[in-house]
Amino acid sequence: MRACVLHAAGDLRIEDWPEAGLAPDEVRLTFGHGGICGSDLHYFAHGRVGDSIVRDPMILGHEFTGTVLETGPAVTDVTPGDVVVVNPSRPCGDCAYCRDGRVNLCLNMRYMGSAAKRPHEHGGFVERPVVRRANCVVLPPGTDTRLAAVAEPYAIALHALSRAGDVTGQTVLVTGAGTIGALCAVAARRRGAARVIATDVEDATLARVKTLGVDRCINVATDPESVASLIAEQSVAAVLECSGAARALELAVQAVRPAGRIVQVGFLPIDQGLSINALLTKELAIVGSYRFVDEFETAVSDIVDRRVDLSGVVTAVHGINALDLAFAEAADRRRSLKVLVHF
Image 1 (cartoon, rainbow, N blue to C red):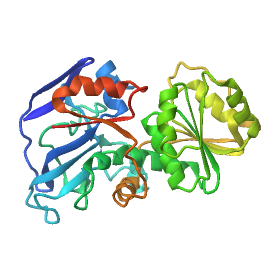
Image 2: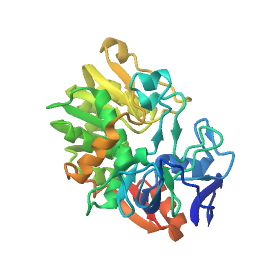
Image 3: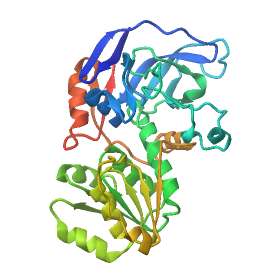
């Protein structure tokens, strides 16, 4: 069967891959739709994501849907033909963080499509992926599997909002309007924010996020007057910093009101200098947000029940034979938010 296999930075191939065996608690799927994530792009471009280095051939992909093809003997509650979306997170369940309910911080996490451990944890971009039944959420008939494939990044956004506290009736600022930033804007509105502001350095990116319910968009590279006005207002109760840029975090500290809350969602390069003394004088809280805990099921429910409309997030869908084009589009923030692939 065909699989999307990364061998090294820049070396991504569609190649034959052996069928995986089926454990008693696992199911075999036929691949539906899968989203290209920022981590997939980093692995492709650099052969690594932070300290997670690709040392052996690895199947990419951790955002995907599929149709049940075969079940292991211990699986009794799904049958062939059921359509599912896969939660790619496999916490150990035994470490101190798992016992405390903070499974996203698991010390022994296995995450699909990740080179964090060796052997690497293969992802789902394969014609017939095998996954644990426990990682599958069954979708009702008629569910758009393209939108369901966005459940994992939307769950990340929902978790970030949980770290922001109660934003009901408040003004929320999202810095960085890429995929996660856009989904954080959607999640902020879903969580009751009265006003959502987004900043970025690309007009095209801001124009897309505007269609998702953002009230005000500011290009921080070309509109210093609006930046100054935002800072002067001191109306922002919570900031979701999704860009991973030092300047964006500086803006967050300046724009958030005293006693406000900043959630760092994007990874910050360690070589970027920061001068955020207002952290002290405003008594701000800066917290991190990493993956998700139990928000995956909530994300699926929101999508299935149409409490959110993520159709504007999916900007392209390509067959696997156009993999180079799909990755090129996904890497171009001016053209795309979420690019999907299928077999």
